[in-house]
Length: 426
Figure 1 (cartoon, rainbow, N blue to C red):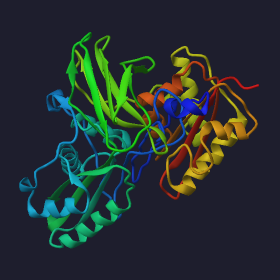
Figure 2 (cartoon, rainbow, N blue to C red):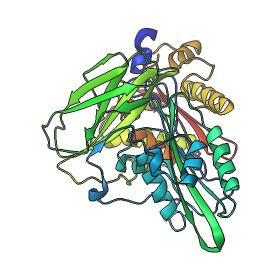
Figure 3 (cartoon, helix red, strand yellow):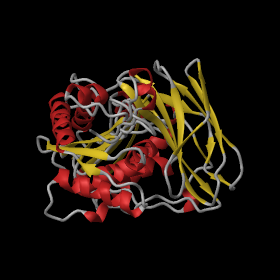
Figure 4 (cartoon, one colour):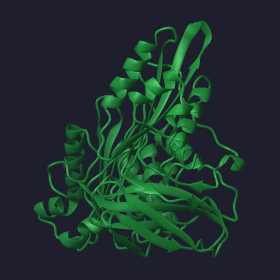
């Protein structure tokens, strides 16, 4: 996130957060981890987790273009009459039913025995392919005896109760019975802070599309950030009133576009909705590594790896180079430690927003930005931040010339990441 002054620091903040459990990573922006195209101070998550020592990894595989819905939208509730008794009991312990999340849960169950581990980026892509726009999803697989549904219900209920909720909890569940009477339940949950009016999945270059979202929580401002097939993301003109944000944009060339709604909610700016639009291109999930991801040595410490990835990304696009600064490293390390202690991906973990923390260290840059994340590994954190338009904007902002990076190990649950950017420092 970038801050020139407290008045607009919240509006322009960019935050990134990633959270994972058992092979997952997640992010959030603008007040929640990757705040988008600006500067900011707090963060969030999407995460996938396995419960109870499940040794079978869940995976989300690529879908054909025909499988993508005609539009991304929310909510997509399931009528109670369409649920059987067990599914109704499961959802009662998880959250309001959602058809798109249920489709993702079914995919996880179907591939849980043979696929590669599910990471946060793959989980996020599965939601996009199902037409579900919410960010920071959480997922888990529970196994137990199919003849003992109470045990599975208890496990799901305990997991659900551990998840933070500041908006509306939405959930999808799926179950299957394997050999020997083993029961498997997959759950996917989101904390819905906004809902999206239908946004077409397919379009032609030059065709104007309307992005309209309704915030479900109080917000001071909101904006829409669009990232094209390449290059830096851009913030498009938008109106915001009565918790409703509205913007229009037209894809300017063939390819895949990422549309992100960022809102200044409690805790700062953060992405609240995201959708894909394919302009004269077949819909497809993004599985390739992010630019710069291969720049780090295999033996590098996570903070050094992230710095190498960020610097390589800038070089690949012929942008002004970033120089790592030990003073910013120290500020980033203190904040990463505070996030780990608070167990929250935020820009203010009780230690002040990024601008305040930089100024308290005796520094006075013109612009400050921050990405924050919780991820299983440095490569997953970088990939998730690059995939988010608002976080990518911080990584690519030409005015940023200095960077501080920290990655603090959690309690067996990955690393807490802070990337702190500034303009030139005296």
